Length: 249
Ligand SMILES: Nc1ncnc2c1ncn2[C@@H]1O[C@H](COP(=O)(O)OP(=O)(O)OP(=O)(O)O)[C@@H](O)[C@H]1O
Ligand SMILES: [Mg+2]
Image (cartoon, rainbow, N blue to C red; front, side, top):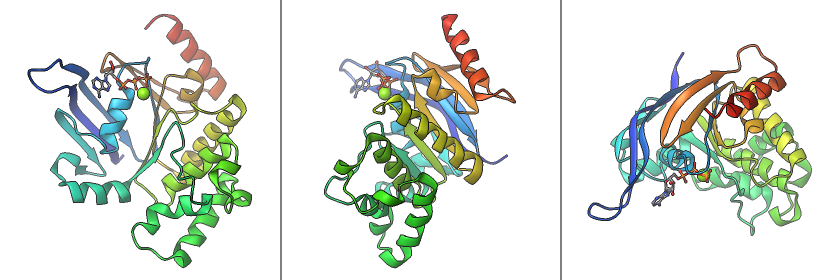
């Protein structure tokens, strides 16, 4: 299978030389194939956000390489990097990151509007996604006027409108109540299964992780064990995860 993402011997050290330094990632290696739904699980401080910031090109590794769709990110200059990010990566944040002075429709359109694509061409794409994400009725409202769950589905539409190679999500249900979290996770599963959206989610929450098909555990800046859902049901996979985490691994 084609690898959409390849992370090769990646380290990240915060702090300048001769100052206090902290190595947050200590040689991370893994790949994500086209169509996979992978979760990276780890405790607070294990390096999840650090890793996602590197994958989303917001920050650079200290050593090692990251390839997305075969493109080595370290070989891109700043402008090329910005173009690559806006074409190949979709990002969902824990706290939505919607612009409050734009309507939900304008928020979703933004990645394409910024590339100079006309509203006539964007609108049908939005309508199609809005159907899938069940946000049709709220497109003309402002983010402040909709629920947290709806905001996150608007954010998901914005992350997918340009058909990125990979969807990256950092604790996408962290700011949601349990019912909205469940809906969001079901939606992400559906997008992965039906539309083959390649997804990488980081989370500390075993319930969220149980929606993925493969889970990598990160601890102290290194990926350790990996578990696969296989043919198990989602609830059975969740129970397995709880048991696994309970053993103190
Ligand atoms: N800008 C920074 N400068 C120095 N150290 C940092 C910086 N950002 C993160 N760290 C340290 O790197 C380690 C990993 O942080 P990171 O934010 O990646 O963890 P996390 O797994 O996302 O945690 P959480 O679940 O709490 O969000 C932590 O020990 C943190 O204190
Ligand atoms: Mg974090």
